[in-house]
Amino acid sequence: MDYAKFGVPKLDEYLGGGLDRNSISLIVGRSGIGKTILAAQWAAEGARNGETVIYISTTMNKYNCRDYLSRFSFMKDVYDKIHWRFIRVEPKYLLPMTKEKIKEGLEAVYGISSDLIDRVVFDSCTDLEKTLADPVLYRRAIRYMADFAYKYEVTSVWVEEAPMVGPWSETKNFVETVLFMDILRIPDGYARAMRILKKYRTPHPLEWFPYEISNDGIVIKDGWFVRKDYEYKFKPHRED
Ligand SMILES: Nc1ncnc2c1ncn2[C@@H]1O[C@H](COP(=O)(O)OP(=O)(O)OP(=O)(O)O)[C@@H](O)[C@H]1O
Ligand SMILES: [Mg+2]
Image (cartoon, protein in one colour):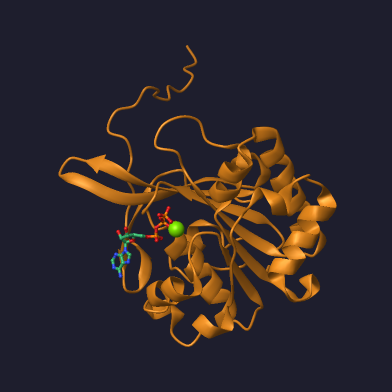
């Protein structure tokens, strides 16, 4: 099986090889947690393999994106191979929302034939959700985006900001893999860690695994974080 790898040791292994081709995955976490860096690593890995990669950013522009991301070691020699697309999500491009409108919008953003595209990053869904400001419209928009990705056999990573309080959006229900990045309180302070909330078709660890951010991007550290206290404990059946 040919997986769409991150090129991040341990993470690809925990995912059973990488992300499944022609699937949609979600990287979710609070602001500043490392979502864009991880998505950029995945994009860079694709470009390094000679794949056609599109990175759609709703918040950066071509200047601050280059200044920020091209400095990471994983972008060496590949930054200019990625098709960067800087867009502003506005209601006038989306409404009235139809499948046709989303398709035309995406084709215009891609700027190259959809059949040729291997990987797409959409960073971030949160902008789309806030612009639409309506859960029903948002659900339709991402369903149309998903249909389009499956039709053209594009492997996608969507990025979403987790709210500080309140419920998560519905995006997680439309994707096959969810990677959740967070900061955990540990006895001597805080630690960055992530976990795989789901991945269809693959057995995967449930524990949190620590990571650091450096000039090499996201680096997974050894070991796991597990809860100290348990609400449930397994008790085997005893035959008398
Ligand atoms: N070169 C670096 N070395 C170490 N840490 C870094 C480096 N560059 C960025 N960081 C860390 O990564 C964080 C930003 O990561 P990233 O841009 O991926 O966040 P994000 O989750 O996409 O946030 P947002 O929701 O604001 O877009 C910074 O807040 C900082 O903690
Ligand atoms: Mg970001």
